[in-house]
Length: 401
Image 1 (cartoon, rainbow, N blue to C red):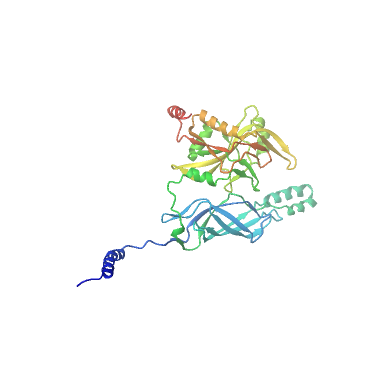
Image 2: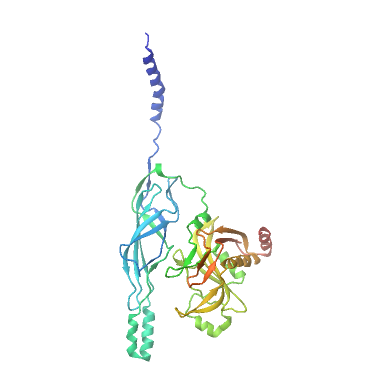
């Protein structure tokens, strides 16, 4: 039998293709999509300050993702992605010393593919009430001049405020199918320090959301080592209560070393620690001081902390507030470097390294209006772990530049 040339080519082609088709039937097809499960946590941070004094029900709000969300080896939601929500309830500060009330909810977050997925998150923020203070003032006034006492009923509490940088954890509302084709691979060996710095605000805020001191120090230390280091270097923890200031000033006068500091905010919360190193010649008016906040990041199992350090050099009266405030040395970099030198001299550091601020701060003002300037760098200080012995101190000193 003779085959024509076209027929022979067709048969050959069939035998070449057939084995691949047969073998291909036994290979699993790669999935085109993955499932992001319901209830997956998404860590968020507010982009701007929201206050019950100005917010209205229905106002749109914006948050930003602070940590990657990964699934099946892919980055499904990247740090820096935007999340949206709204204000669902507002009450302003009211008479009888009652504070404001603000309720927000998060609706959705952007995926790495550009699409959005629904979120579940609802948070209520209450302003501080002054009801007890109002009652005490009424009682004292009534004892002196009764007709004036009812006027205190009109006193109001504080507005409710969601500060810039406030952290909230939301959760995905339901299972979401995500096309793999549009997803980048999950990032491996991500530096916790770099991620922390990338999402870190450059400046702290006061309770009303006004920006103030710059963050100029990073500590890598376990909590007990952080406390021991400052105690060993001669620093004191200041008192938290301002109500006892007058009492201590009357009794201790110029020897009052624990003068409280104002509460300032990072991540929507006040400082975890407040340390001061008073000037022995002018304890109340002059002091080195810093506020420290714990972050949610760790390096090699050791927590990272951020701090804002300034040097009080005198006291002045702010007339429009009728309050006494400290003036600061405007060169805040000098205070940053002083603290490093102070801890290094006490043989408490194992590493020093300058890092750039996420947003450069060359010149700004404190929350009370004091001007300052900087080279826009933060100083990373790694503290020695465990008790400092003479032998360890010598070893640490030999590693420092």
